Structure formats: C-alpha cells, structure tokens
Length: 148
Image 1 (cartoon, rainbow, N blue to C red):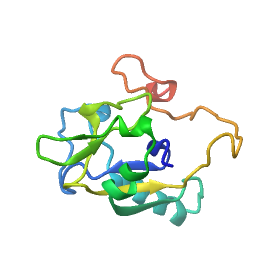
Image 2 (tube, rainbow, N blue to C red):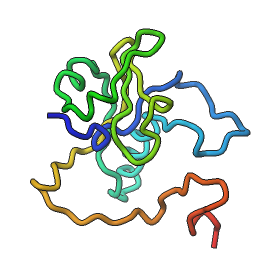
Image 3 (cartoon, rainbow, N blue to C red):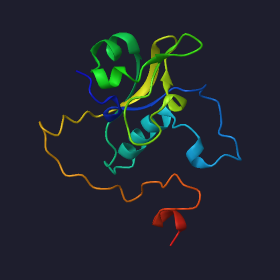
Image 4 (cartoon, one colour):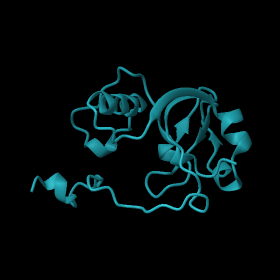
C-alpha cells in the first residue's frame, strides 16, 4: 500500500522548464523544481560528497501507480481540477492543501523520486533536524539565514 507518498515523491513538474522565478518573489513562494532535485544528486556525486539521497526523474500514471494502490488517508487528498486533470496534495506538515497540489496531464506526471525508507515499525531509525532547514518565514529566520 502507498501510505505516505511524500516520503518518496520529491517534487513535480508544475510549469514549463524554461519558466524563471519572478525577481520580486521570496524564495519560499516558488515551487521546487523536480529537475533541481535530480541535478543536486548528480552534482553531489560528481563532487564526491556522497551526502544526497539517490534521486531519479520518472513519468508515472497517477491513476494506476498512486491512486489505485493508495490507502484511505491518501485517497482523501485526490481531486479533479477545473481542467479535468487528476491532482493530489498528500499528507504533510507544510503546504499540503489544494492550493499546493500536484496535478497530472490528465493523469500523467513527471517528477523526481528519492530513495524509499520503510515504515518506522519495519526499520527503526533516529531522526535529526536538518541544520540548514529553511524557516519559510519573512521575519523569523533560521540562524544560518541571518549570516551569523
């Protein structure tokens, strides 16, 4: 069963590849680029850091590869857009709502996919807060964002 799609689905094709972020937008108002996730993984390997988890790009059918095997909680997040495209937003603590949904065309979706981690019951692990995590806030910045 697909329980938490956000655990392996990194980001998706949301607008044409040549679209640039508007200069007056804050960095946290733009969508992540799935191609950036893939490039970051390959750059990490080329530079020899070996710190980025494996990421690949794929085109998938949201109906057969996510919707048909998803659990009840995930299925609640699916909807059909006004353009008759199948969309979902998954379950997470940030930006998981219809305004930040991922939509297929009509149900085909290009995205980046990261290494899968099994459920915590199958593979216990420790969790550390990422030291360079962005704050996503204009006034309350993380320590590293302040340049101190």
